[in-house]
Length: 119
Image 1 (spheres, rainbow, N blue to C red):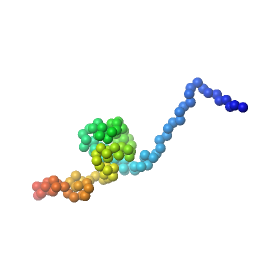
Image 2: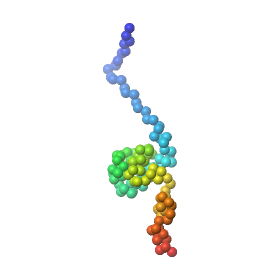
Image 3: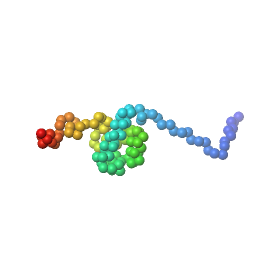
Image 4: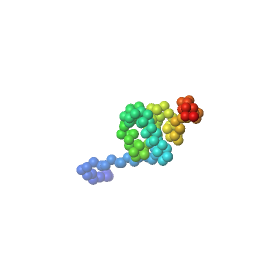
């Protein structure tokens, strides 16, 4: 005994892929905001979005979408880390004053010279 199935003229619809929330669980809301700001800062360091996207090896539209919609992922941060030479932790950390060394926190030499001139 065989089972017959009535099939319509149109092909069956493909099942829709659902996105896993895994990538959104890796970064908190604050980290995504800081990541977007880090990308904006890197853009000013590289000059244009095209130069930054070429250095990162990603599409410019992907960067715009990530910043505008707040969808900064670990993959984007990893590419930004490789392009800038900074660690992901440095990209997501609180801003460091420009007169201080990022590594040790000491006042930079040119900042000391500027303070000496002002006095």
